[in-house]
Structures are given as structure tokens and as C-alpha cells.
Length: 266
Image (cartoon, rainbow, N blue to C red; front, side):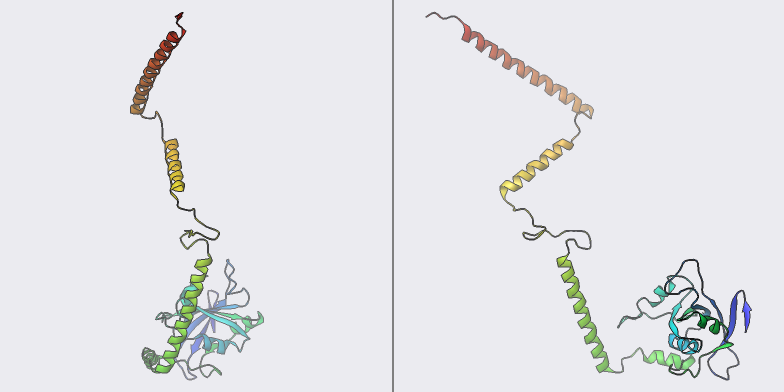
């Protein structure tokens, strides 16, 4: 066991007589931004973990140091990388699987004292772990992956499909009920009906006429008057015409008054 730049280097052995082993780098996990899923003082960080290593095998080995709360994998170190790793892999009929690449691991213990014990192990021996399935590598692993691409138990697959579709129908009914009770949909549109809280107006001719008139008045109010040159010119001409018209009307009224005041003894 040696140390390189703060990491403890240990061998990962898949069999007791293995002569050539992978090297795994370990240290206590700590970052500036706190992550509740990887608490400080209780999380062991492992680098260069082979792709065939499973959560079950790491839990089985490190439980010798203390109770393990969780094991999380990620393609690279980072706060949100573990979330990306597991996206789409837990769906019943999902074809997405974790990438078969070297990865990093976060082993979270229940007690801080277990972390020091884990850092002191001379090697990570993943063979003959009680309660854990045997890790398959090489041709055995490839054969298993090939077999998993085919449906071997038709009845079991049929039961899974039935359960999945029943769950899908429940989710659809719940979504439809939520949309019906909601005032606005996902795009922000509000459904207007004749009853309820968002009842619409009664579409009579008188109501529609008032709305049209209001819209016309609003349009006229928003128009810019005497802004352009042609508007000023037309406005002046219209004023002159109105003044002439008013002058002629006043002359007619004065003439009528004069005629009504004339003295007519007979």
C-alpha cells in the first residue's frame, strides 16, 4: 500500500491467486460545496474503479469497516454526476444502461470511525464476499450480457408488461385529473367555461357589439394624432372646412333672427 498525491493506492483483487491487479486510488471525500448525499467525514472516494465492479460487491467488502449507508457511481467526480449516471436506468423497459467504463465510486458509511478503517485496508478483495453474487468478468460477463438481450421467461415478461401498463394508466388518469382541476395548463393558458370560477361571458349580439365598440374606442385612443406631416396638413384643411361650415350656419341663423324682429303692424 502506497500513497500518491493524497491518495492511498490499493490493489483490487478478483481472485486469491491473482498476480496482476488493478490499482484503485482512495481518499476521504471532501469538496467546497456540501452534498447531502455524500456527507463530509463519512464518505470514501474511490478512483479508477473497473466497470464490472458492482454496488453490491463494494458494500459487501467495506461492511468489514462498518455499516455502509450507500454506494454511488459516477463517470467522473462532480456533485451532479451521480444523478446523470442513474438517469433512465431504473425504468422497467428502459434500454438505457450505465456506461461500461472505468468510473469513480462514493462509499458512504453510517459512522465517521468506519472511514479511517476503510482507508487502512491493504487491498480490496472482491472474491468470496458473503451475501454478494459473484462478479463476472471476461467471456462470462459478455455471455451474460448477450443472454439478457433475449426474453427467456414469457410469463414473467407478460406480468411485467401488465404491471407497467396499469401503472401508466394510473399516471395518465392522475395527470388528466390534475389538468382538469388546474386553472392553467402547462403553457399558462386558462380554460374558460360557462360555469365555475372562470365562467365566460354570454355571447349575445348586444354584448359582442359593446365589446367591438370598446375595442374601436381603444384603438382610436392609441392612435397618434398630428404626428406625421400629412396628418397635420389634413387636420388644418379639415379645420378650415369646419370653420367655413360653421360661418355659413351662423349667417343663416342671424338672417333668421333679423327676419323675426321686423316690425309688421298689419
